[in-house]
Length: 278
Image (cartoon, rainbow, N blue to C red; front, side):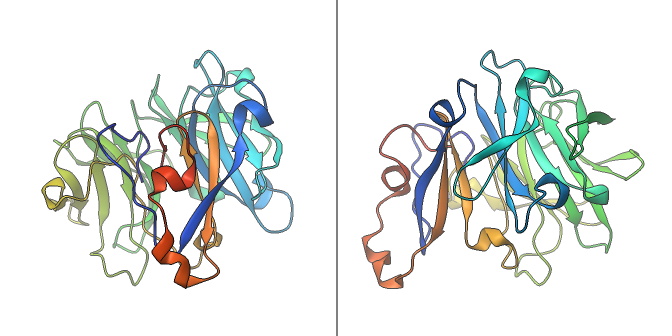
């Protein structure tokens, strides 16, 4: 996916999936700013059977961010963090980490990684700087940890539960997302970092060696977001796309695989207006 698709790129529909808009922010919840991220709503963050969806959105002035809650059909169910409260900087990116607590980093005014609790309270966790890539998991050493990028300095850090931070990679250009392959994946173990405008996808191994495993020269296109599919997640049936002009689309598998031949390009298939945002 691409969080901010350059104008010269197109997105191709994913085999087996169609998409429909499930929420339009301005029509469904009111006047707000930019959408930033989506995450599963689980446990106390959901408070109901099953799971829902968390999304981040800025206030109208783009001076603060918030976290909303909706069901899988786009029904808005209130705020975890109201953008009007000013508790988070704009454009928060969400990740479940230590003790199942959501951690967030931000690109604008991004000095800290924050902890966001189900009751809406927000605390600072560790200083990080401008951060767009944040991921929690095992990169191959058998220990689950939090990892975060700083795209201003071109570095990636490993962060322990007590806030201890260790730089594990440097010299990377504009790292905008991080991802970890699932256990049993055909991808090599390690932490993967995607650059926004140059190079491609680097792999940071357990010994902190860095290799450019997937160069943009291979032709797969410049991106801003990256993830590895998790066949055990409810998102195997639904995943959500953010769009630049303020709406969310839900993607779900086609019932009839023979319809794949008729898929339109995602730019048209997701919505016949505005550029897609993932």
